[in-house]
Amino acid sequence: MAEKLVEIKQLKQYFNEGKPNMVKAVDGISFDIYRGETLGLVGESGCGKSTTGRTIIRLYEATDGQVLFNGKDVHGKKSKAELKEFNRKMQMIFQDPYASLNPRMKVADIIAEGIDLHGLAKNKKERMEKVYKLLETVGLNREHANRYPHEFSGGQRQRIGIARALAVEPEFIIADEPISALDVSIQAQVVNLMKQLQAERGLTYLFIAHDLSMVKYISDRIGVMYFGKLVELAPSDVLYNNPLHPYTQSLLSAIPLPDPEHERSRRRKTYDPAIHNYAPDEKVEMREVEPGHFVYCSERELEAYQTNV
Image (cartoon, rainbow, N blue to C red; front, side, top):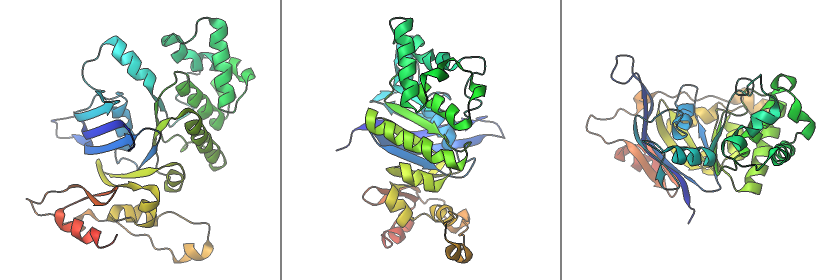
């Protein structure tokens, strides 16, 4: 049985709570992430997937619900020592490799920030050796250590961001749209690097993205979000071969294929939430349609979905 590393229980993240303009960015979602796996989280812009990642890592304090990491609650009051240990075990790779690196710092100091903060090097020599090794690990070289971020391409900057995250030897990395700002030719290189690092270091990833084809390539399981709700969760191949929720079907129908004949005949499905037409007393929740395949639905819809598996 796979070991749960991260457990999300009825997580809510509301902005402007109690006000007329309140936004339910994350609205009561639950899922687990198992040690050593990659869980992909997909959905359109504004669905709440990035807010989910930022709430898990405590960049936002949760409105309600629980985030458990290694069985310990992430949110709530923590001592400085507890926060420091948590921040070492869980790291984040940000979407924009241009904005996430301090332009006034040399690459060596950017990567070594965590090493310095957590006292992971005994002296300056060991510090620099760690920096050089990390640069080589992500496909750069030691000469890059004394340069500034503006001297690098977008793909190289994202590699620096990955090296910075690896510097404190984390167990879990949240990758928030890590390739969306990169050229298509560079995206595969960064994703392949992440897969290689996962195999070598036993890392666990939450990979947040809107590029469904890339998410399928890197993810073991995939969760689909729609307006703050998790609407489907399944192993990657199962989700792509047999999407059940109408919103998932609409997302997958939009993926282009390098086949002119297919593209000429492709018809995108549109999703209208009104099709569900729930009664006021109808309970809607994530239900297991088949082993490991969950859909946000009512009991009535569950029976219909089970006829399609």
